Image 1: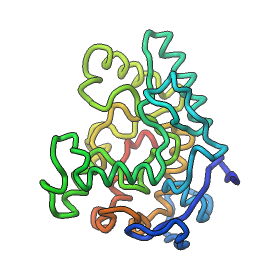
Image 2: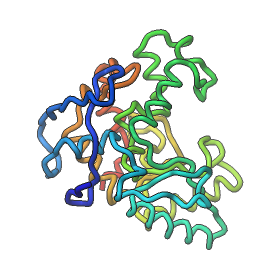
Image 3: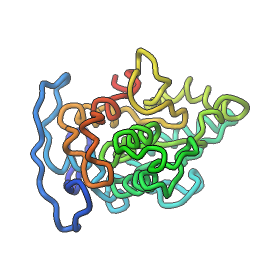
Length: 266
């Protein structure tokens, strides 16, 4: 698969809101807006990489994670991000800390499965709620799920640059071994190119997902892809899953794709 400048990966196309056969892939024209940074022109393949429309298992710019470093097999990352993680892992081990990858690259279809299981109530929310029963209105349900889960097409996990480490509960990182691990990452992750995009909400990050102490992003690639998303991604492009009709109402690109720790943009 061809590479762009900055080693960007590229792949498949958009679907309409709701299920479509695999061979129905209309080409979507991107919108234009003033750019805060000089971002190279976008083509359809780049856009589909940003929105997860590809298979990382068959993409040469992705590598399978050694299962001894993860909690399950068959997870993938971008080569550059994985190489940096291995160095960070070794340094953490020297400090008596073991990093474990719990989630890495998730393409559109994978994220769709997570989202729709919560949307239909098959998966109970972390709050203990059954989403369709407690939130019958689509916009309210989507907003609740968006506390911690991305709409398909908007997740940073699409890019292969972002990983979840060790535990999915913020409270685990607040005492004992979890606190020791978290403090080490806060002090050292930047040395390996990693940044935490979902810090506590405050004036620096007033919008977006709730805090995730487990989520870390490889900045040398992810900040470029965030710039692409800011320049070219629109809410109307977020399609192909249950509840996608409220993406524009909630302005998911502005509030969630771009609602990250500002320190992860530099």
